Length: 262
Ligand SMILES: Nc1ncnc2c1ncn2[C@@H]1O[C@H](COP(=O)(O)OP(=O)(O)OP(=O)(O)O)[C@@H](O)[C@H]1O
Image 1 (cartoon, rainbow, N blue to C red):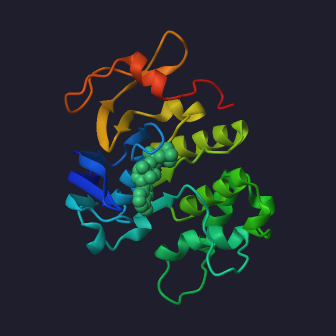
Image 2: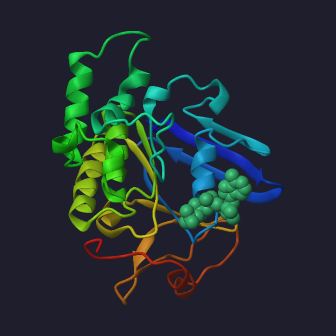
Image 3: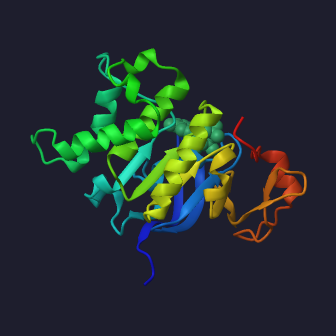
């Protein structure tokens, strides 16, 4: 049976502040795929994943999450989003435990109390990112990399069907990157979809089955990431949309680590 379609975008254009940022994206991601979105700063990677999630509106084209346009999508418990940065509003100091527990909200019935299942999922997620010992600490007392791990735990706690991660390894130390790779490998084995934006794949690289390269708001490559003799990585040349990219061109534009994420 063909896997369910997680995301489908057709002719996706996004204009921000009068500037075209996405300029015609056609993309289908099926359940169980592990996809890396690569590209230079400002190429449109975050815009693409935020638009897939309905956080930014299309100026033209269509996009769906599990078959529904974002505005009509109701199964948010199926989606785990890890944004680039932690944003805690209201000036109230939230603890690590509270942030991770908030990942369960979409799963809970309105006004229902935290269940044993909720507590177990939160504890397992904190354990997976090595932050269980900081559960009572305010998130603002954590380093950037630790905050990133808390955001990953929040997504894990929700036990979603798809993880959408915007630079999940940014600022995260090598050991924690390896832990994340192991965690995501286990999720992929469970048939979860993973879409992640990265500048350096590091230990995540063996998981990646498909690579999208975004340049100037277009997907200029959709396919494998192939190792180059120099130890760095570059994409093969069967790109999408008629733009032919040489490996040299790409590796000059992107830094894709090959080693332990250091
Ligand atoms: N809210 C916004 N209003 C106006 N322009 C925006 C907005 N958000 C992003 N942009 C612009 O859109 C372009 C693409 O930004 P985006 O964040 O998608 O890039 P990116 O590929 O994720 O970059 P990075 O690797 O630096 O995170 C940039 O030129 C950016 O300045």
